[in-house]
Length: 153
Ligand SMILES: [Zn+2]
Image (cartoon, rainbow, N blue to C red; front, side, top):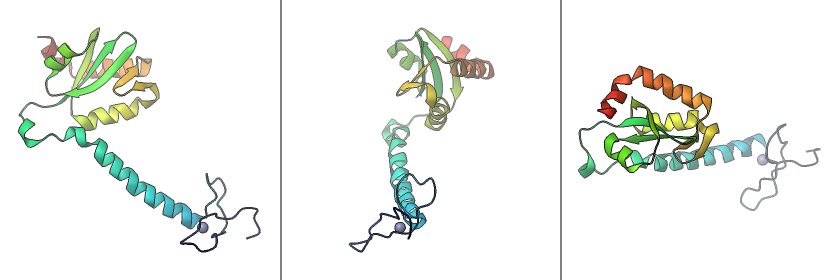
């Protein structure tokens, strides 16, 4: 290759690959080696995702008929989006100023809400009480008002 720097990948002790690097590539790798790296990381990330999904899978002995709910609580200028099967007990254990909303759903819904509000994440389940999140919680409250009322009974 005439380029200053071709693909830097070295397969099993051979010479560097030196094929041309596509424009904008984050590292000096040719298309083939980028794909190799991508496939490797995709498998790796799938494993990480499978592991982080574990909290949703409880041992059989802990299974019961109660359904998970996703709850939104505000504490100061923070909002927590969490999942529980026992909202009353969870709320009793969590410092909070206000239960904002409750919606049906388990860890999958919680995870997608966490992704949705990722830019406002402080850490773990806690997010800044950004207007986007506050209006989402208000919308959930309206949609599932019965669940909120139930929690306050
Ligand atoms: Zn290469």
